[in-house]
Image (cartoon, rainbow over all chains, first blue to last red; front, top):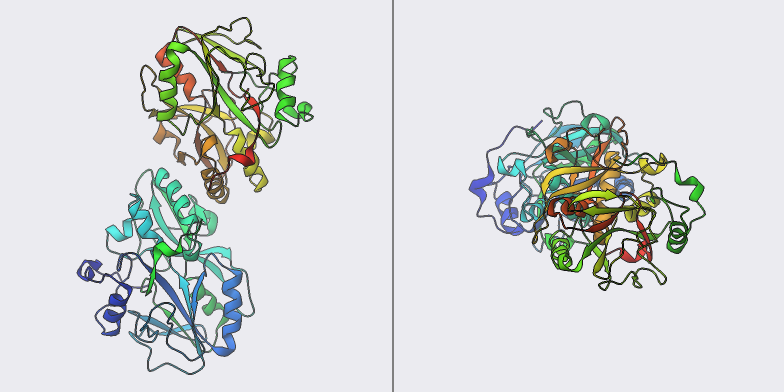
Length: 271
Length: 271
């Protein structure tokens, strides 16, 4: 469980994906990126050795709701020019997780020292990218209003296995009033590159979540009377799959600390 | 409150809108039309005298979710060729309601004896038209499975008044599993001509419904554990507005006994 972080208000000057990446690169930012660089697509990161990368790619394709791929780097290449002209995947996130044999081994602020020539970087769409159109539609997003991380939970819903990768679906949860939940389904259905429509509404226990106040990742976000808990597939799912597959080495982002790209969220909307 | 009706299984031979209209015209059918003539658009009916019709039209335009207009006849004309080549609005529904000064006065099987040269017929889209694409998507619709009428409720949500017309929003309710509720929002959002997306999910009391087991119109449809009550704006709303406005004379369909048209539901889908 990550510790709580202060509100990102002091990072309000970070208006573009490049601003956020440079702030991370210089060590000035390691908190949640929700609400930063409005309008820019944020992504989850998973980095696997080449001899695990093909199976991981098949896992993503088999599970498009939690793992919508928005970028794949060439093996050994830390650049991803399709997502950011000057992007360096080794330095441009606020915090990383290094995994050894499926166990969390370290949470460094950059991964230059851990980089290897056989590593393949995968960037997966993130629900933070759909929060901006929700807010633009007048739907309040409590974890942004409170300046904390979104609540994320392991479920009892299995992903579709691929090769050695398998494990539970991880979801993020936002408490919404019913009319806002309906509008949120409409808005996020058009955004399949960032998890698309919710996977569940209303009954946490039906998907194996015993207590909303105890998220597996991120912070607890209180429900208010008359609100429904609305659950979206989450890009932390690959971390659960890495923990289950136990590759000898892997790197991911730390939950909530996303790669912020140069893509504009408005470009993702599909009809 | 209408009485329960037997399952429409014995009307399974009614495959087209014209089949249903002819069965009504000959007096063979006065039960709910849900599930009949698959693929054909069904409509709510409201008939007002000409000196009330302009205000009623403004009421419909001001309240497009409960009152999506799909046809308006010329004053005094009982035909509506845009909805059915041989359609006669006076005979082609299974049962009507005649209203005098906002009070229900009669429930005849045809309205030829009540017809006047100053009457204007309005046909309003009906949620039965979206049940077929829901079923096609694998979503069970309990009131069809049980062969009863859908549950309808007066809410505490006011419509937008227009002229002398005002009153509460009436909703229909379908119990759905959460994943089906999400898919139903996606599917019905494309069908604005037949009420579009739901107006509420989850908390009946929040919209002024104290007891789901006591619908104001139609039949009680039991909820099962793990289901959400999903509420759509309903074409019975004009009947509540007629009861509130108290025009000296009006005719509507009886709840659940719809006009079945020659339009195909697939033609209604908007992107």
